[in-house]
Image 1 (cartoon, rainbow, N blue to C red):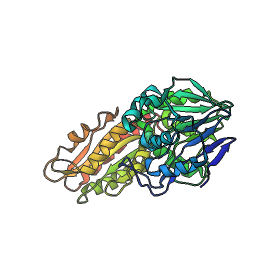
Image 2 (tube, protein in one colour):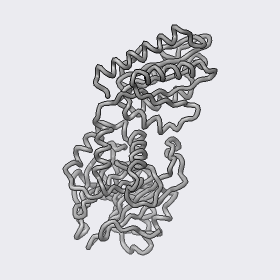
Image 3 (tube, rainbow, N blue to C red):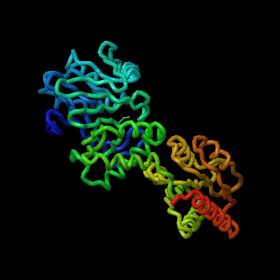
Image 4 (cartoon, rainbow, N blue to C red):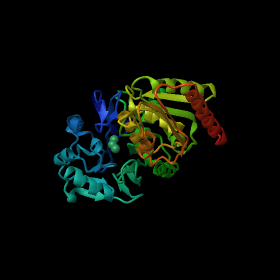
Length: 392
Ligand code: FEO
């Protein structure tokens, strides 16, 4: 593929990773991803904004084959999917400098063993002239590491935010063309990567709102030539109140918890609540993360294994705790055969969730009439709580 022009002397020089299915050995990538790098050729200096995952260094180097000089490598983020090819670029261009935040330098020295004399560190708001083009650096810590910054190309009104506003999607489309598909992919990305840092995301959204932006060029997925699409989506995910939604991750071993879940989902749906049910025996954990972005309540369904929750349920609870969604209420339903401390153990796994814990429904064996009445009561409590808080 050739370098793809975005504006005069500004090019996309990224790598499309169609086959990658897991990120950080953790995050499912159902639709692959891309690592977007950008070449900005000013009248006097040339900058490369971010690089690509080390597995695809050769793709980037092929774009650079006929580029005689790169003066600056802008490192918006030290994570290796964007920084991992920097050493190779520096080897090709011995006079090039890496431009990053002071924290970015520390991390790149540690992660990639780049020599300190190859760096220029920039402060928040500092600019770098390439001649007829000017790069402005916007410090934006915790999107999603402490060293992150955004780069704004003033003359062309392009924001290069690295991970922020990105989506894991392999596509040959340079720009978003299927808004529905990108909304889902970008929400998944937000849920898995950005949601734990919602407070700083909010600050950074405030920080960029006064910039005139024609194009948002993230480092994963297609670019946004209608920036308001992704800015409004992020604003909603980061700022809005939760919705009248219950997320229900569960698993069942012998069918008792399954019966409870089926009944409980019906009881909530009959009362007008949207329920998102995830059988953890076969779920894409990313879909659970997406559902947690908007949900007001999570109810965990678990059988008892050796007195505690099923390990798949413990994993889901651990994940929800790490992602810090804006849940307001949490409860647990489930069954045991001869004894259970599943509630106590699960409650101890979710200290980050600043949610009110509603009375759980834990039963012995198969559910009986009184157990279904208890599930009805829990459903009614959730409905009342949602109404009280105005969650629509
Ligand atoms: Fe796409 Fe935080 O790396």
